[in-house]
Length: 406
Image (cartoon, rainbow, N blue to C red; front, side):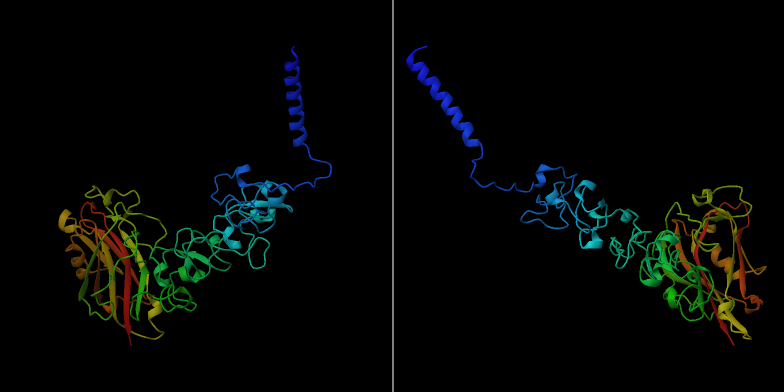
């Protein structure tokens, strides 16, 4: 090798040594602390956040990237959002969807004691935070066993969705300004089909909410929800006399409504309402309703109006209201028969047989009954049947009874 080659090789070696020496810490130089990691250094499990972990400037509690796995960014009890148990410290675990208990987003995840994985473990002063419901009152997801509702709140699905001492009562929303088909948490007596406790009508008034749209002396049997199709857009009883009709007199509302088909049967409604019926001798199907798998053979129900009759009083008038749906004798020629307490009701039969509710259509009618139908039990035992082959499917959304006494 030439002299110049040796000199070049030596320069290369010395340069490399200098480079390695520069990368090693000097004995007297202070050590620089390691900066906390950023969110980009850890998986974020699909959370949306600002990318800044706890311990760094700009970190925001509750942000999707707040908690991390490094010791400096692990969260303690009540902090979030976390994505895994490894992002929690102090014996806590990452509990899902409880953020709103701590002022974060409702679906945020928070580091809490492991007992908090039981979502019902919440309440005032609880280490798991206060019980909160992320969905508004009236929403179908509002009440749950973890977010128990109080009086007048819904929608609930079962008693376990309600606070202690309350029951989930079907279709009471209208009594608290919600949709008619919303189920509410109420005292159990609000669903026993009687006037009791602090009620002023059957399962309405007092702690059961207002008796919607009815004058004094009128009881509602069933619910106003267009045969389980939803709330009416207007007063379905408008233009009718619901109390005080003399025997044989009748009124009908000018308001008519479309109804759902097929009919959404639940089996939880007042007997004789929100269910398809046909004739007891059905031998044919004339329309879609008459083939309904939940249809019943003739409508049979009992309307107990004893709450309207004071002890020792005499009934002077009885007015029956029927929210009719899909009565089509005018189309199918299968006339309806009506008896009340065993007595044929010619006026009521004529009203029903003159309806053509193809569509189906829902309409409210009222008729004055003979006061002599009043019996010691103060109950109307109603049977609506069909005379021929029972092929016309029909429904009733609700009944009303209005009574005057002296």
